[in-house]
Image (tube, rainbow, N blue to C red; front, top):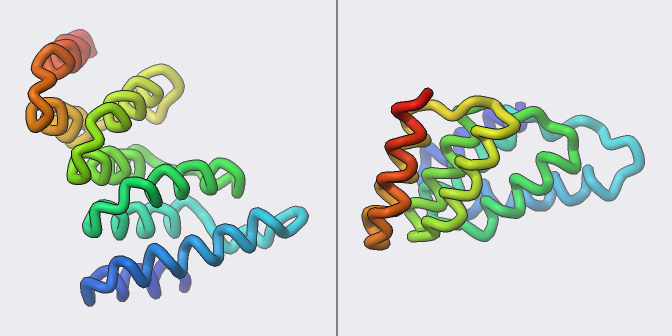
Length: 140
């Protein structure tokens, strides 16, 4: 149900509200001993989508950290959305680091993740990094 609320806020372009709601709930869950498991990977995925659409890269970092603390399993799509958030916010270094982490520990990034990172590198005139990523993609 929480995912439905976050998604409804996203559809109404109320991304900052979705980010604030998720931040408050996730922070409360982390402080609770044992947690209520209210925040799952799907909820965090929806929140990361809000971050991407509102260029809230700082909240993207926070939600990735909180997802780990809540033991929420994020899928490749959620991580791809996080990478997109970094790319839209001109945070190419964060996008590159997250992609590198995914390639080492998983889940394996999808083509959208690779494209988002290469676009972020291109926008920052970091063509060397974009070529390196393209080389990694060719080796996959």
